[in-house]
Image (tube, helix red, strand yellow):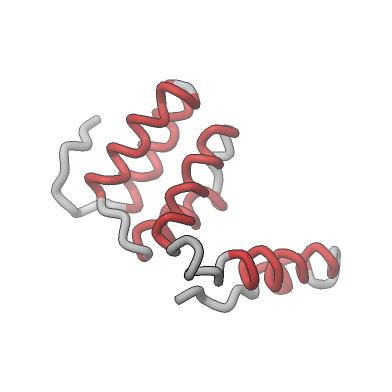
Length: 114
């Protein structure tokens, strides 16, 4: 089940209220809540690869990795997803994604290595 998002209003509500509203109510409200069309797990997978492809390996990427983990993507699966996407998105982007994924999935056994 999608979580009620308030980050837009919390971080940008006074500065950019319309953007905050669209972020919280439309993107994370209406779009992410359409689980009958695409599961949260699958939405997380698509989002992680989309952000990686753009090279957006920042705190928002970390948030989506954490969400992907919470939505059921395992450490082994994220390793396979990033490895596969590396050939389409770029090798340096995969390295950056792996560095952050290692932090998010720290403590779980897998084939991820330095």
